[in-house]
Each structure stands twice: as C-alpha cells, then as structure tokens.
Image (tube, rainbow, N blue to C red; front, side, top):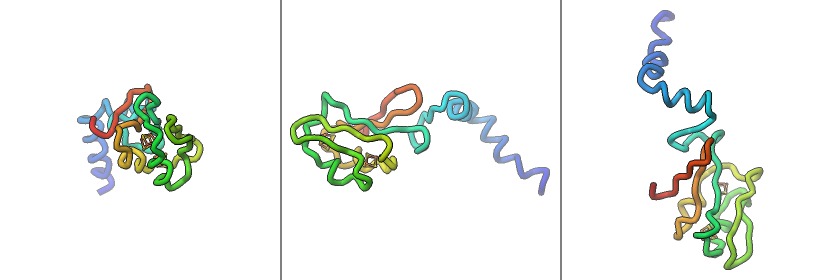
Length: 106
Ligand code: SF4
Ligand code: SF4
C-alpha cells in the first residue's frame, strides 16, 4: 500500500502539470478557485454604486458612497464570492496572480 500511495498524485501531476506549475511557480490559480491566490475587485466603470454588495458582504469588506464606485478592502475580504453573485451589473471580478480577471459570466 505504501508503494502505491503516491500514484494518484503522480497521475494528476502527469495530466495537470500546467496547473501545478501555475500554482507553485506563478502563484496563479487558472480556475480562480483557490482562496489564497485570488482577490475580488470592483470594476469602477461598471459599478453603479447601488451598495447591494456592501450590504451582503459578511465581513464588511466593501465600502463606498451611493451612486459612486465601491471598493473592496482586501484585508477584510474572506473571499466568499458573494459579491459577484449579488451584483446585477457584473461589476465585481475575481483576479488571480497575473491580474487576469474573470467575471461571473466568464
Ligand atoms: S452591487 Fe455591483 S453595482 Fe452595486 S455597489 Fe456593488 S459592485 Fe457596484
Ligand atoms: S468576496 Fe465575500 S468577503 Fe470578499 S468582498 Fe466579496 S462578499 Fe465580501
């Protein structure tokens, strides 16, 4: 059993080597799912300043004035993803590593 235990890991490395390298070498999560490697940002040009994300955020990480672009305080954000789901304007994106974004509909 001890000799075959690493096989599942070795197999995933064989077939998903690029994923491993992206995470380990480039600190980038291509799927934008790893909480340690992502951040949520408000797109100022799309944000209508409705404040819905701020009301729903469980950690009080989103602040702003009505009818002006809101912002995410990264130190408070627990990366739950709720803000992307509640924003009706597609104004929240998730970024990883090299700054490539992916909105809700991507
Ligand atoms: S829900 Fe969307 S449009 Fe409304 S304040 Fe938040 S990011 Fe801006
Ligand atoms: S990901 Fe969650 S904790 Fe972070 S800003 Fe959005 S709603 Fe708040």
